[in-house]
Length: 120
Image (cartoon, rainbow, N blue to C red; front, side, top):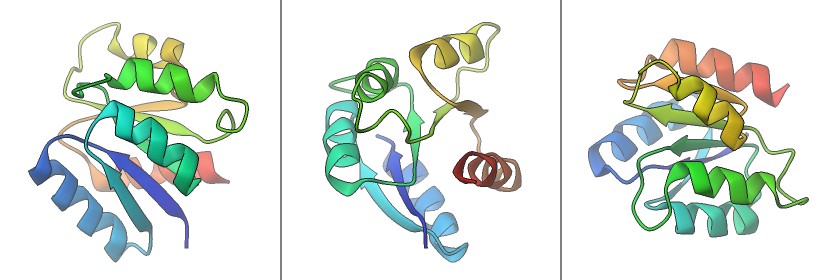
């Protein structure tokens, strides 16, 4: 069972997505801000990270940069999750180090396909 770190500050989004992922057989650990997300990524060693970009304390862009600059974390795939679906946002996420990008509201089938591709 793959461990997924969900970094999401919105309680409703966190609850809904974690329950849906757990029903699909994933073990989900959660962080509520970018700083906690970085710390939990290092301690929990997830197979993949779902990173909201608009986070308190440390935003998702900077949290991703910190993780991708850490040799122990570089190989962990990160999918940016954002409601900001404007031109250039995908490029911004990829240049911060994200391995893929998905928009909210979450299309679970599409997100699962991206997750599976990155964890192969």
